Amino acid sequence: MTDTAEAEILADVHRGVGRILLNRPKALNALTTDMIVAIDRVLAGWEHAPLSAVVLASTNPKAFCAGGDIRAIREHSLAGDAGASERFFATEYRLNARIAEYPVPVVSLIDGLCMGGGLGLSVHGGFRVVTERAALAMPETGIGFFPDVGASYFLPRLPGAIGMYLGLTGHRLDAADALYTGLATHFVPTHRIDAVGDALADRPGDPVDVVLNRLAGRSPVAQSRLAEVREEVDRVFGAPTLSEMEKRLRHLDTPWAAATSVALESASPQSLEITHALLARGRQRTLRECLDAELALGRTIIRTPDFLEGVRAALVDKDRTPHWQGASLDAGTLPYGS
Image (cartoon, rainbow, N blue to C red; front, side, top):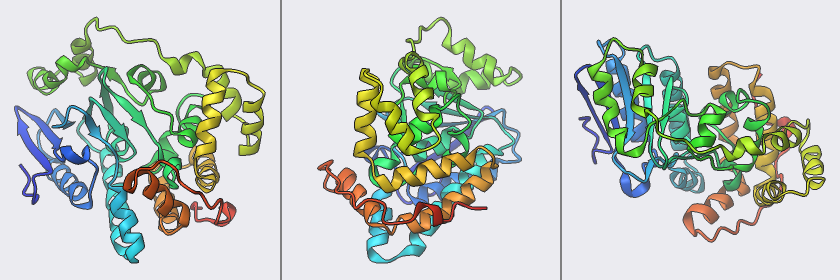
């Protein structure tokens, strides 16, 4: 177990398998700087240990990780403490890169909510296991921010225009959708999820993929609803500009188009512009280049009125009625990286 003040991270090694448990249940494991540092420290210490795998999981059945503690970032911005926010993002992105480059297979067990920073913890590892209770999303445009934690790297690499759709709308994926997009790699039913660590320990010589498939057995996975509207997604979000996307949406008389229009209309206009530009650049960059660009961009965005208002409406007052000021920044002049 780590020596964090409130045991928000629990870590141990059992029979050659490292285990890290997020243990901030009341906050749905929203990540603080201290939690991120603790996870990074544990992984650094295990980097050369004789482990067959590392498992990331949660002590809360409702959530793997609800994201970063964005309320704290807002408080830092209001207090003028740019340094605290900088430390949070720089530390988080360093951890994302470590997970992506880790020499031991990293297996994330997504049983419940996984949003924002939770995807940063999971998607960069080689194996992302979802249960029937999984729900994944990058909802940042709804709070005046943009999809970060390497999302400008992994979203553009999803099939077709799915990544642009998810990044702009914050659409929530269930287990079937996560498997369809590739954000998840395996399905294991909830009642067997706690057996993953022991199964990996029992068969250290077997490929992780084989062990996880064995646990899934014949468990049925529902049909992906996203797959059913894939043609519409690609047509709309494959457009070169936001205005063309909106135009194509207006020409579709379907329930999906109506719901998608509502999602875009409720998002911060500034965030939509920034997200579109960032994702368009991300396909030609490495993960580290994407993380560097996101860090530079975040320094500016967290001081804007739309970010402060978006977090207030979603997480502070929870009235869900943000009053956007529109694009207070020129999206074309922002630091997206070279």
